[in-house]
Amino acid sequence: MEPAIFIITLLCGMLVSRVGLPPLIGYLAAGFILFIFGVQDESVPLLQELADLGVMLLLFAIGLKLDVKSLLKSEIWASSSLHLIGSILFFLPILKLLGLVGLDRLVDLEIDQLLLLSFALSFSSTVFAVKVLDENGDGQALYGRIAIGILIMQDIFAVLFLTISKGEFPSVYALGLLLLPLLKPVIYKVFDRVGHGEMLILFGLSMALIMGAWVFEAVGLKPDLGALIMGILLAGHAKSSELAKSIYYFKELFLVAFFLTIGLNGLPTIEDVGLAGLLVLLIPFKVLLFFFILTRFKLRARTSLFASFNLGNYSEFGLIVAAVAAQKGWLPAEWLIILAVALSISFLIAAPLNASVNRLYQRFHDTLTTIEKHPLHPEDRQIPVGNPRFLILGMGRIGSGAYDELRSKYSGEILGIEHKQELVDFHRNEGRNVVQGDASDTDFWEKLERAPKLELVLLAMPHHVGNMFAVEQLKKLEYQGKISAIVQYSEDAESLKEQGVNSVYNLYEAAGAGFVDNVIHELLEPKTEGEQIANGAETSADKASAKNEITPNLSKP
Image (cartoon, rainbow, N blue to C red; front, side, top):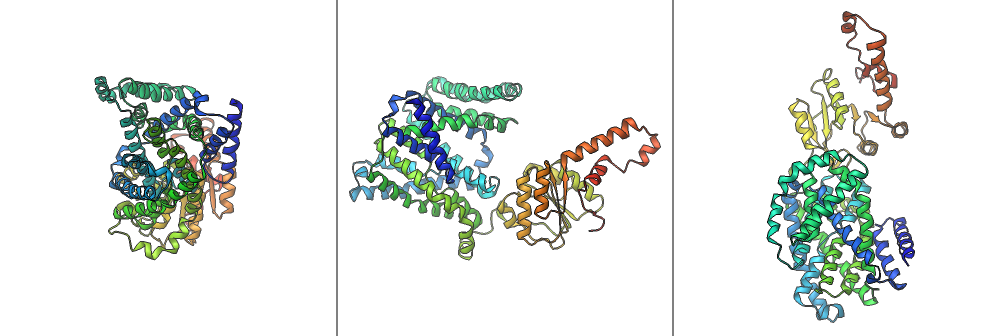
C-alpha cells in the first residue's frame, strides 16, 4: 500500500495547487482518501515519526528567522496577546451555546475542553500568510512584517502549550540548558566551517534534532521547544538564512506526513462538515478583532486591514494543538477531523478575499480612515522626500556609488531609498540623504510624498521583480521623468525597456568591459605617472557605462 500513499498524496497536492490553494489542503484530502482505502495511522507507524520531525523542523525554521527585538514591539507582542485572549473569550461562549442547542460534538464537552478548542481556533495559518505575502511581494511591507510577527508570537504560545502538555516536571539537569548561550561561540565556529551543500544540511538537522529536540527531551522538556530554542540561538549567524533555505524542503516533506495523519483519523460526517462550516462563519470576528487592535496601536487603516485579512483563517498550528490534545485524551479524536475541514474551508474563502482586499479598502477608504488613531505609528506615516531631482531606489554598493557620483555634480538634489534601517543609519552617518522605505512593496508607494521636481529615478535594487514593480508604481503615479535601471540578465533588460525604462545598465557586461579596460590600461599600455594622473578622471566604469549606453546625459536633464 506504500506506493499508493505517495501517488495519491502527490495527485491531491497537484490538483489543489492548480487552483491556487496551499497543497496542504490536498494532503488532508489524501489522508481521507487513504482512510477510505483502509490505511490507518497505526498501520504506517513511520508516518507519525515523520510528522513529529516535520513539526520540530517547522519550529526550528521559525527560530532561524526570529528577530527577538521585533517581537518586543507593542504592535506585535501586545496585539497577538490581546487577540489570543479576545478570541478565547469570544469562542468559548459561542461553543458552549452551540452545545446547549444540541450539537452532538459539543454537548458533552466540559469547560476545559471548550477552552482548549477556543485556544486552537485562535491561531492563524503561517503557511497561508507566507504564501500570500510571497505572491504579492509584500514580505517586507509593514503589514507583512506585522502579520509574520504576530504569527511567530502565536507559534510561541503553541510551543508553550506543547511543553506544558508533556505533563511532567523537567529534570533538575534542565537548569543546565541556561548555559546554552555560553556555547554560542563554539557552535558558531562549527557553523562557519561546515561550508555549504549537504554539510550545511547535516549541521542544521543535528542542531534541530540532537542539540535541540533530543537534549531537551532528555532533561524532561518538550523536544519541540528544544528545536525552537536552537533555531533562535543560530538566528544571529550570517548563514542562518541559507540554512533555513537548505532545510526548507525537508521540513515541507515531513509536514506532508503530519497532514496525512490528520486525514487517517477518519472521515468527516455530514454533521462534522456542517460544524466546520459554522466555525468558518466565525472567522470575520477574528478579522475585525485584529483590525480594531492594530488600529489601536496607531497603524494606518490600510496596514491594519491588509494584516487582518492575511490572518483571517484557521491554522495548521491549531491542528497541532488539537492533535496533542487528542493524543492525551483531552479532546475527542473527531475534533481533529472537524478542525482539519474548517482549516481547508477557511483557506478556500481566504484566498479570494486576500486577492480583493485592496478593492475593499479603496471602496470603504473614508469610513476605515476614521477609525485610525493619531498620531500614526512612526513606521506608518508619510515618507518625507523633500523636493529632489534624483531618486535612487536601493542604496547597496551600486546605489551608493551612483549617489556619490551624482553628489559631486548635483549636491543637495538627491534622495536615496533603502529598506534596511542599519543601512539607512550608515548612509546618514556618511552624509547621504537617505530615508527608510521598501520600493518593492505597495505600502511604500501609498505613503510616499510627491516630488514635483523629480527628473530621474535610478532603480538600483538587486532583484528584477522589485525593479519591475517600481516601474509599474511610477506609471500609476503618472511620473513623467526618466528611469534608469541595473540588471543582471539580458532578458531582464528587454522587459524593463518594454515597460518604458529609458536606459538599462547590464551589470555583468559592464563589469567585464570595465575589467578588460583596466587590464589594458594598467598592464598592456603602461603610461608615465603624469599621463596616469591626467587620465585619472576617465575611469573604467565611465567607459563601461558609455559602451553599454546605460545612463542618460545628466548634464542635460
